[in-house]
Image 1 (tube, rainbow, N blue to C red):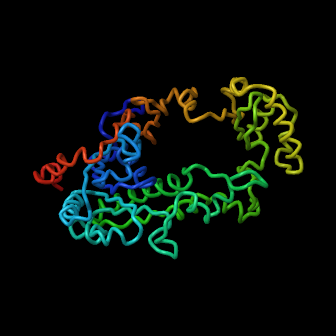
Image 2: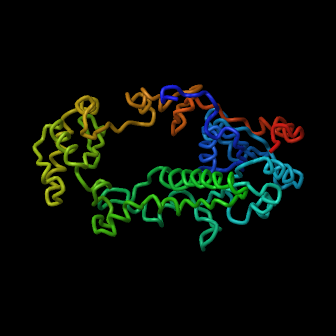
Image 3: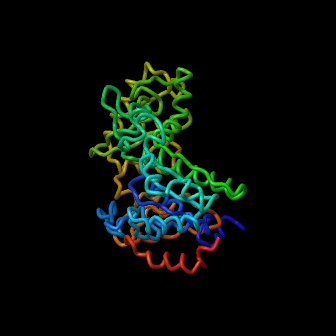
Length: 378
């Protein structure tokens, strides 16, 4: 089958069932990814609505494509129902502090007693052990001790907060998905599940592998804004345009740098690109040039080139950027701007994500499936 002839099946994870205990941030994001890959994700919501009281189904993007069952896990009968659900599932996801799931009676051993091949994913900031494991935190406090937050920002200035994409999403949700898929692959052949301990601190530190490599080679200084890819280099930075907007420059390699300075209209020798003694002067030259035209004008100048330059756009503007527009990377559904599923698969069509369920919307449906045994017969 050619890449241009996708099938229309639900995705590569069709037939995989995921039980997700509703929470905030990285856990729901990971479950959203699994749902978009075709898994049947059943989210267990609290009777009060809990975390979802803040958003309606239309704007609850992390709930896209899931089903919702409301259970009060303080009630023994609800715990038994959840264990029944777990017996039919391939993956179970929770984001409690260590020990909470066990106290509720839905820890790994409780579920494995009914379903030994279940993959049990645990999403936390600190991990399941260590002196901070039982304490609260958020993205910023998880990435701070890893060195990642220290490395982001201008020289001489404070660390800059990278939204929650480095910790919650990069070091957390992404690693949970990778771990779950790896454990799921093994469980298919061995019949044995395992715990996936996804900690934001672990994932964030792991993502710094290239930086640690450069640091070990003395090619990276442990100072903010003083290195090749942290804004220290004038050819990897952002510059203000005539009307006060910004252009991003990433012309790291000499051929790209040559294309960049040529289109920018400044004199600079690619042979001296990495001479740090010239970086101050070069930065001023580049900044002065960018200040002579608007962002739109510079965007047109660099379009289609290998200069590695792009406009810095707002969240709402991004959908109109030609490359993103061509790929429908961002779409508006019922008035809500959102990203299409990623990554894309050659044998499965990319479709507009299904909306999020209302809490409890599928309770009767799912419980009827358990009672019949048809849908959940494994």
